Image 1 (spheres, rainbow, N blue to C red):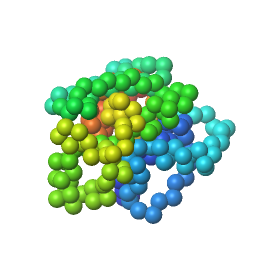
Image 2 (cartoon, helix red, strand yellow):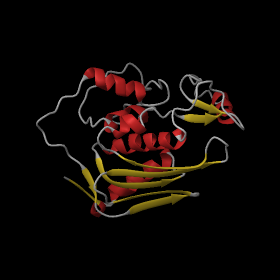
Image 3 (cartoon, rainbow, N blue to C red):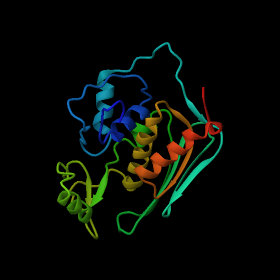
Length: 216
């Protein structure tokens, strides 16, 4: 939210922009919610490619991490520390045969986002979706825009896009959330069982400590 204007579910679009190295663009919207599309950033990457990318004369501002900042909440852990690139080390752990414990280390460079992360779809469990529907939420959700997991399998007939698509999507979300900093970040993020609230708290804690970062 900014100046009284609210935008909902924007992380997949923001992730596509940051992953494509875009830091200046206009996007026309006719609603407060960004379309979920297929639950990944793939459609947004295609739109960016069609729109075209132009290099501009102004220097790019980057938020460089200078010291480690961390947060922990109910078994969820997340930290950021100095690094030469944007590096994300992510761990997820769900008691489900398709997920269990997955780890992935990602460095944002040379088209790596479109290749390794951008197509990873969001996922949810049937019992969670039933709760959301009862609360009048996620009404547009379907097998077209998410991986829907049952107790021991999934409802989708199409296969997973990566064997570890679940942890890759968590990295996609992290990139979208930290894009709210307003500029690219240079640092290493370590995330274990994180989520949107933890990611937002870490960024808030980081920004409050002006000795932990500088803009170059």
